[in-house]
Length: 138
Length: 138
Image (cartoon, chains in turn cyan, orange):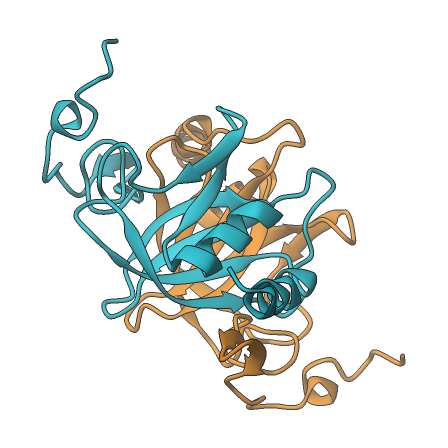
């Protein structure tokens, strides 16, 4: 990256209020349908990578490393626009999701709905997790 | 509430994975347009109150108390459906927002967009904060 691009990205990062762990919640929303795909976490480097590459990158709290969304599954999210809320501590990524967002093979992670006194599964996988993650053994 | 209603609500709460502070992020989305209105936090009592009352209730981390959305401003959120993500640690509230969600008087809190190397304000207040919160003095 050029110094100018780096400087520009740092201006974006500077306005985001990361928590004491250096993280903010990040919502991924399909840019044209409005569907909420998933919620993950971003640290400063994840924001930098997302803006530099034009693809969503998160911070995996479970793995303790940057998570370039789709790096294993191929189900990438092209970043259409980054938004920030009024108090600067939550970001919204308008994305173009290739394939599915959820590790279960569903388009959206929010597939449990509370209806008539029980949690109901409201969507089915579009692709098998075994296809998404062929190298996983367990 | 009847014992049956209480028991039903406890079944909803039991499936949500609250963090070590007893909280989960909660997204409020306008049920028909898909617009993301705000993100706040819920504890168990906020989920219970939301389901019991059919209106969004959050946990205010800054004030350390339940926050019945709209209790001061009148800008309530009728709860149309509660959803839960795949790993159970984020909730999505499909709501019918009365008036505006943001304390700035804007419909949505996500009014900053990163465009052409700068944060741009993409919506204007629909109502003055002074009208929303007349008793605030400073």
